[in-house]
Image 1 (spheres, one colour):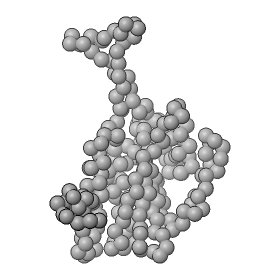
Image 2 (cartoon, rainbow, N blue to C red; image 1 turned 60 degrees about the vertical axis):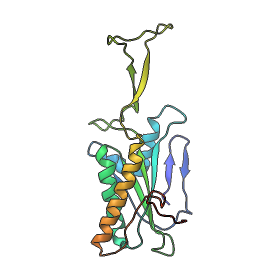
Image 3 (cartoon, one colour; image 1 turned 120 degrees about the horizontal axis):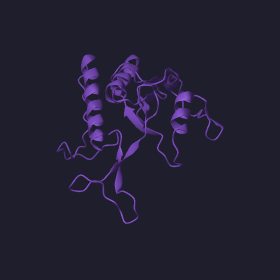
Image 4 (tube, rainbow, N blue to C red; image 1 turned 90 degrees about the horizontal axis):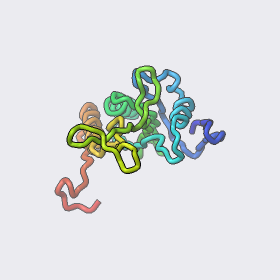
Length: 202
């Protein structure tokens, strides 16, 4: 794997046991700094903007790739999916495709997604904002402490549970499109056997 220097703890991160990497790439939205195409720069910047010790720096996905799709289409497939589902919404997608030995038996992609949106100048935006609660007259509500009653709202909806199902479905759709384009009879169905109404033990 690639060596990365972490500015937070001043240590080099290196995982040489991660073998079989056949492609890696960073996809940037139009407003992201071009320097973030460098993996070391990107993730140090993503970590530097966080102030809480337990902040989530990234969202991780593992995408299985059908063995029936030709290897020279792996990157095209993953790139198209990430561009449509993540980068178009403002996330940066950092993905690596693994094809462990023996080649072709378990191709898959690891995808890391940034958690914060950026403004038009490429500056990280807050994950949430304070919203004041209002009474029936549209007035702010004062608490006994003298403070105004408020709550936090996410600035983007990327954490919405609905996306788990949406993204799973879209990954199914694009895999099947590539299988069909390669004249393969196989089709992917990401529903469990139970959801498909099949009485089969996995």
